[in-house]
Every structure is written in C-alpha cells, then in structure tokens.
Image 1 (tube, rainbow, N blue to C red):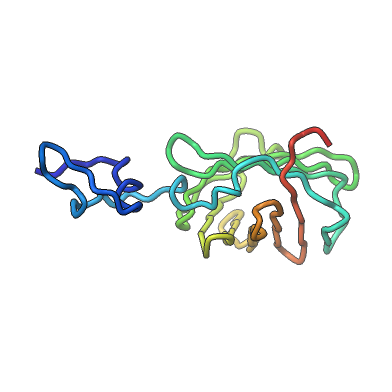
Image 2 (spheres, rainbow, N blue to C red):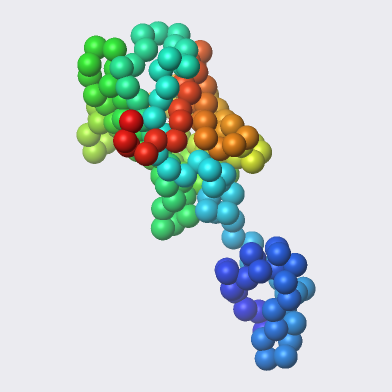
Length: 172
C-alpha cells in the first residue's frame, strides 16, 4: 500500500522514524512534489524597501521602490512590486512563480487586466534566484535576486541596474 503524505518529508529529513500500525516509515517512499514553499529561501519572504543610496542605475533612479515576497496556496512565490519613477509616475505589478523555471504570467499596472510579461524564476543556490522576463516573445530582462548571508539585504541586478533592498517594517 502506498500512502501519499506530504507532511512526512520534513519528519524524514530530520532523521526521525515514524511508525504507523507497527510499521516503520523511515524508508517509505516520499512523494516527489517540490514547490516554492520547500525550495525558496525563507529569508526572501517579507516586505523589502529599496535603499536608493546604495543602489546604482543605468538610467534615471526611481524616487522609491518596494517589493514583497509571499507564498501562494498553490506553492508558488508571489512577487508584488511598486515603483515611483524619477518623473513621479507610480507603477506596480505582480506575478507568482515556482522556483524551477516554469513560465508564469506577470500583470502590470500599465496593462490593466492583460498579461504583460512572461516570467521564470529559478533557484541557483540557497541565496540566489535567476529571473527571466520576456515580452511579446522577446527577452526583456535577465536578472538575479541575491540574499545576503544574514538574510537582511536583497540585491536585485538586471539590465545594468543594481537595486539594494532591505527588509522593511513600514515604519521608516
């Protein structure tokens, strides 16, 4: 009999033995289902505010920028962003992706309810995620999210821009 128990993986990963009905499950096959809740760096989750003084820009620097990262019910990373550009124009958008490179749709305030980009997010290591954004079938952005070792700084590099974000508690 095969039992699919998604909560069993953490128990087995800790080297614990679980017995059901007198049968040890330490060697039981664990169903192969990996999602962003298992793979994404935990320190990524939260609200991030751009440190514009520590950032560098190929073009005009924005007046403000923030990003948030959360998990969705379906096991993806939900990314929401808002930017106040140098001219004072506000833009925002969101997308939810697995961290395995599976394409997903991005929505942007400039496009309303029409999908704006196709985004892929891929985990490189415990602190690095690669981002690819295509628009109308053409590569638009290749970027990287890199967490600092202490998990308090997130560097987002793309198209010659380097945005440095810090965890934000919305107080400052």
